[in-house]
Amino acid sequence: MRSSEPRAPLGLTIAAVAGLLFMLLPLALIFLYAFSTEERTYRWPPPGLTLDWFRVTWGRVDVWQALTLSVQVASISTVIALIIGTLCAAAVSGTRFFGRETISLLVILPIALPGIITGISLRSAFNLMDIPFSFWTIILGHATFCVVVVYNNAVARFRRLHGSMVEAAMDLGANGFQVFRHVILPNLGTALLAGGMLAFALSFDEVIVTTFTAGQQQTLPIWMLEELVRPRQRPVTNVVAMVVVIVTFLPILAAFYLTRGGEQTVSGMGK
Amino acid sequence: MSMTADAGAILPGRGGVFGALSDLFWRKPKLLVFLMILPAVLWLGIVYVGSLLALLLQSFFSIDDFSGLIVHEFTLKTYAELFRAQNLDIIIRTVAMATAVTIASAIVAFPIAYWAARYARGHWKAVFYLGIMLPLWASYLVKIYAWKLILAREGILNWIFEQLHITFLLDWWLALPVIGGNSLSISYTGTFLVFLYVWMPYMILPIQAAIERVPVNLLDASADLGATPRQTFWKVIFPLALPGIIAGSIFTFSLTLGDYIIPQIVGNSQFFIGQAVYAHQGTAGNIPLAAAFTVVPILIMGFYLWGARHAGAFDAL
Image (tube, rainbow over all chains, first blue to last red; front, side, top):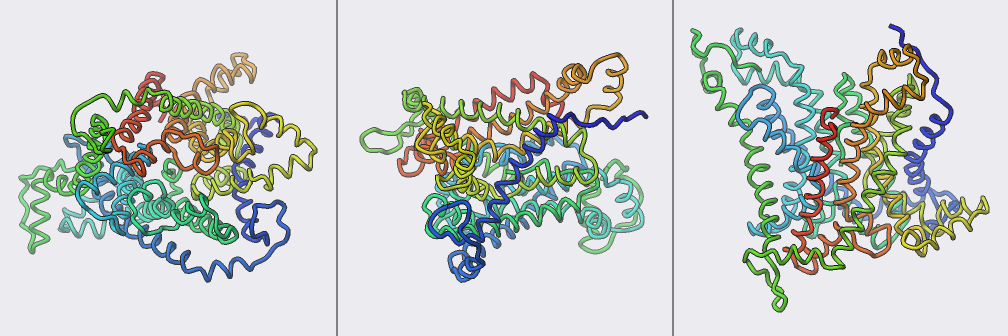
């Protein structure tokens, strides 16, 4: 094979690197501002650097409450999404049945439609069913669009899982549950872990649907939105912003390493 | 799991409840499938799609002008209201913004995607991966916040212009009608930049995937037949990358149509479709009009997807 390794034209390289800088510099700026001593404005360059705002943020009750709520919501939504998504993926990849394509469409729909449509529909549905807005309505909203991430990861893995292994296990006397426990689950493990982490990140970051399905509770993104619309203490927002970037990025890195075997499901998704 | 084995095979029954259950599932695979998709169908199919349809249905109701209550009678009055000057403005503004963002992001994304797909090796591959994935997955609000920092009057962008002594350029730009404004953070230019930044990864990834799929021997063949690199690019690579661009544009266009947070935080106070929907369902309590407004992006995207399918973008997805 004559796959020559051509050198990129200079103009192209400049455009590409400039584009990458455009993508990355704003995030770098978030990290810098977290250390700025400036209190009232977004002044650049920062007049000085300090670690003091980390201490202040640490002592803020509202930040902790929002963070706790976000972690709880994300954890429970992820568990629900894992159950529904895996079952659905198993059904769709294992068999052909009437309405199979519809199921795939159904799972993707909540993330394909703009968040505002999902949000309003759910809100009016909750109103119609007389369900008061609570912790659980937030979770229902989040689980709705988290299913798709788990589903995508699981479907990709099921495709690689050979049916003959399941049949062999059953021939050797295992019942369906033992097959699931000892054959399917170990094979599915990393895909589910990756899907779960992506679902967690998606839920942890979600704001549009949440504004419609939350009552008085503040998840971290809702807290952040409040600060964006009506800034109260900017340095605290800076610190929280930095922490949020780190928290959402770690699962992404981990998911990347877990699914490196060519599935590339990390890239296909996002909100 | 293929369930093709003959159900009538002679096997000893399995003991216990689990054994009996798995025998049942083996004999009736459809029952198992049914149970597996039941939760998804119940939640997504009935509650979610049901509430979507209920919302769309409401767009055919109207609101009583005097009492402010919803009149539950079929009417197209609410849709007619969309064509009032102020509402039509909102729709045109949003579609124009979505178009501008889509075109600009295709232009900025293409070199990045092309470089990442064709030339990135080793370390550079990781750099490009991170450069695309970090912004994709970083919190949406934090990204907007970063731009609030950048575009602020006392922020880094103004500072750079000052350092280079070209502030007059910025002033000239802001003095332009429509796209200008008092400062970058309250102008359409600002809104545009944030949209561009936030949706950029969605444009890069499909283009990159499309270019990566172009077989190297096609390029070799083109070169062997005497094409210059420029000809190879325009005659071979670009047509094959086009479905990727269209696929990316589906994301950037649709996401811009539906967004209501970015124009609320960075921009002048003119409404976009998302904000109109939010305002009408919230304080105004005019759910029918809000519902009618949500139909607009759905319709536009319907046409867009139909056109994209025509152009063969789905074959590349």
